[in-house]
Image 1 (cartoon, rainbow, N blue to C red):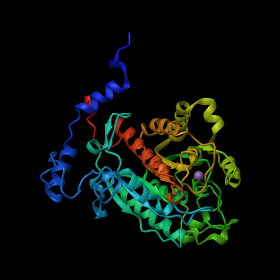
Image 2 (cartoon, rainbow, N blue to C red):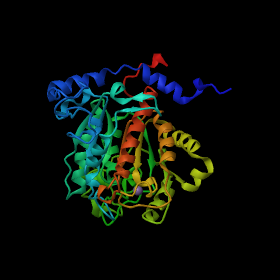
Image 3 (tube, helix red, strand yellow):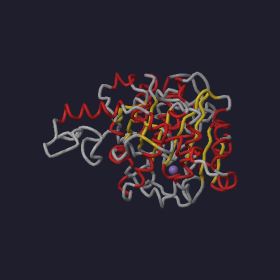
Image 4 (cartoon, rainbow, N blue to C red):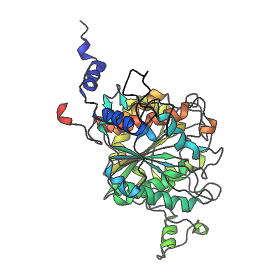
Length: 401
Ligand SMILES: [Mn+2]
């Protein structure tokens, strides 16, 4: 006999049905106060005259998921999670445009109400989320931008708030982790979804979006650059001409805890493959994903990333999803994940908890119908929801489960 009580959908509709809508009701009251009463012919008196809440989705001033704008960033610690944009694409090696990523995500995120039947989560009710606005990037200078980004992300993280970082290109992986890892007492694992390995030392003589994970660990030959910049004694290396690099401090992110999922294709990865081989990161191709299946891949990624580590960081390059679904990106590479495959893996990974996350490489000028921005938005919503459902983020009453 088929028992509907056993359906996932039955359990989750029950949970969502029980959950109070305190925040939603407060938002309506706020909208009426700020936006005045609607015209007399409007029967639904929760509607205001000027749009001041989440509806209509196409109206109003967008923050991510209509979350409060944390303009006074000194108060970011009052929130459990913060969306922060880093509109930087100077690290791009092919076609730019990711500087418009944060705006695109904010705009399309207005479509969503904050609840998910898939997760049985209502982010509006169960997570104190803000939009921290954007980091002030320096478009003409990669290293100065890296310094701005590390300091900004470090501020959010040390305020006790989960950073949700929206790029921007993937060069940001390096300064993002540099903002978090130094504040963690122990090793940090990195789970990296991408079609590209992003692990070469330099690209066109600078640290570009092909290079962030070269700088993991303390044993790479360019560690001297940090010593040079800090005025510490150091020995020469093949890259002594690059002493303009401001820091290389991902010392507690060993490559053995770096798991790279979905790598392959025909562009950009050759120089980094030698580095990955020498340093011992875990590289999983699409063939690996087909062989083991997505759930097993996610479990193996957790094993490797968490081994002797205190925390794990998630780096999600939207080009890991096939360009048929995510065309709006700087270096598209056919043969990537189906969206549902990616969603399953991030759900399993995020359920174990994360110290921070980034979604990078959304390039709206190349997007179609906002599909790519929407997928990136979905990655953020799924990761945060998986963490809320597992009691790793937000304020769900776990005793009710
Ligand atoms: Mn990529």
